[in-house]
Length: 209
Image 1 (cartoon, rainbow, N blue to C red):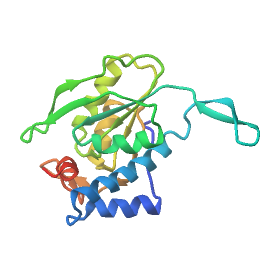
Image 2 (image 1 turned 135 degrees about the vertical axis):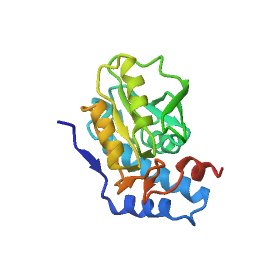
Image 3 (image 1 turned 120 degrees about the vertical axis):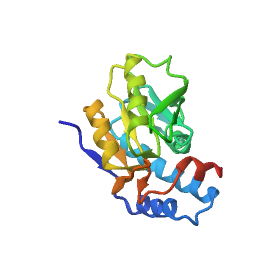
């Protein structure tokens, strides 16, 4: 059985999602809102990250604390996935970022890889594949295929802002053990592969072109 899709229901996340959906939101405000959502997604998916106990000296005395005890890798799917990276790095600056470039053919909706920086993936790293949109699932499955093929020992997590049922089904059909964490499960992906009601093209809206 596929793991459940976790949807963040926090009012602040849903407020920022409304900002993203509005066609009147300019690129600067769009980038700020998606960064805030990314921070919330990071807090959620890293809730079980391993830590180790340490001692620190406060201005008054020594006390116990923790530090992160496992390597975390972010794999943004270019170019729209870049919109989630800064929010994750705000919460975990020590995370490594390995870029993956995929372009989708508008006619066939099939992805083609034009850039991969995944060669350093291996071992016991926690890997989070980042893409604002999970529409048809083609790019998500292609990205997860590439991550798994690198020999990562632990299952990756797919993190997005919007997820369509078609994309969820396709991901879990190919990778039934991969968790999906999102800010919204939208109604559908249409015949052109656009999420409805969606927010348009996340990459175009992030970068203004």
